[in-house]
Length: 192
Length: 192
DNA sequence: TTCAAAGCCTAACGCTCGTTTTGCAAATCT
DNA sequence: AGATTTGCAAAACGAGCGTTAGGCTTTGAA
Image (cartoon, rainbow over all chains, first blue to last red; front, side, top):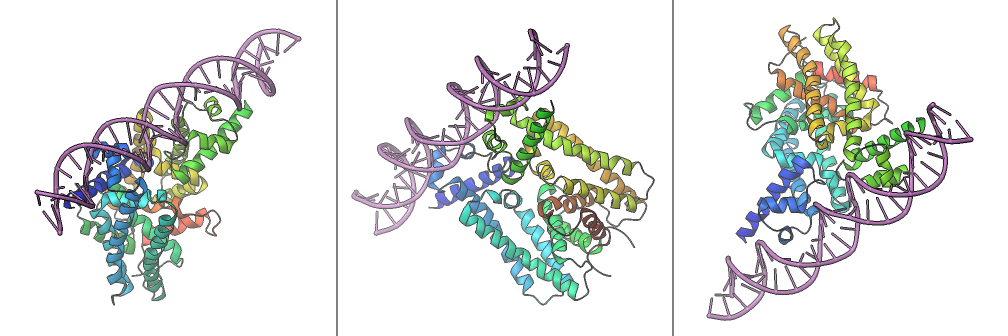
């Protein structure tokens, strides 16, 4: 049993790598198998299909996002503080799962029917958490901007972009990146 | 001749659509041909390969980005004004070529060796334009932030995200979007 | 020690892929 | 009007795809 778990993790790791680098559609089971050091058919001892591998990667990191978000939403912080913590938390999840995050953001669309619907619903629920905080901040007069949806879009664009350019080898730690990103989002670029 | 040009454009349009919706790797020449209303082999009267279709889409919109950027960089505006115009210009190009932009941002990596290198070099040159303006703004004391590279990354994340959520059916015009995005980038979210 | 399960392999299935060859008909040019 | 290029189709190529069936070997529990 522990052997199987290890192998399963190994497959997920290698598949995630490929999915990020070449994309889901351009990655074949034979590619994955060769890198794992196993025959293609053997992968089916661990996963029912190529699609199931994608499911594991996508939904596992989704769980991490929710586990990070929940306590913050339920806390008593003000909108500014909440947003700061959400931003830092969000990009921390991304940075600590760079490959899975890339797959989560770019390859989710290859999920098949039932799981695809589930995925989209989940993502909307997660985004609603941010939406509500932004809304609170606007209502309370802490935040500029009037169009909440527009603002949420911008917010996610800034945050989610991180998986494309963050290098683990770089000198910016995840928390520093979160700090600076929060500053950018809240204070902007210009000095008044 | 004019017949061929029309067909060529039609193919580019349909291919762009597919590449955006399903991705380059998951789109086959047969898919494209069927939608065009032609046999797969006939596509090769207009393009040497599937890869060449991708090249057309990617490099054509690249030209638009440069044509927009050049006069702004050569102008005598201050950094703040330059950045505003660059942001508005950039997202205008995206919004007016939503499909091509999606391919440009997400499918460029499927370009093959010589064009891939050319593409990357081009993109770096384009990004350097933004980099220089940010640098000027920091030097002149107009901009906050100390890490120019980091700032450029955030900037592009905000701007490039637009192709994923902008709906042409929406009520926000391209120029309004540019305006509001510039405000977000420069002033941030929080009211001091 | 027995025995079922887990993990893997060989072989193959039906299918789709990008692309080429060849030829024909219509449009274009001289 | 004749010559030539253009646009398209029919047919096929070799290759790679996801996946399955069946059997062998090792492993871990009783």
